[in-house]
Image (cartoon, one colour):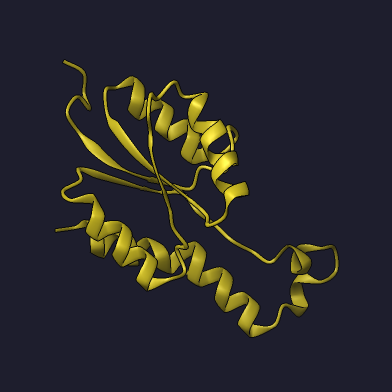
Length: 132
């Protein structure tokens, strides 16, 4: 029996094979875990995520659309999961327009707040839903 045999959990944040979440999922799968994956809403994002998951060798993966910035989406996803043993939160967001050279220091409050909400607050929001 491997370390994660019969464990199942949610992996959030796979965008491609370079994502930290992809490498974490690779280790989990190799250790025997069952991973459930989310992707950003939209067909393009689903295809992109599915391609990366295919590279993990997971047969018939469960892939769920989720906007981490939406409490309604978080509730829907976590309510559908049942019991899980682990959560991998590996998401971050920043408006690329404000990351350009010379612009970061002028980032408006609402843009900064959105980046903080998606990158940090969602960990707390997901952990609270996963804890039970």
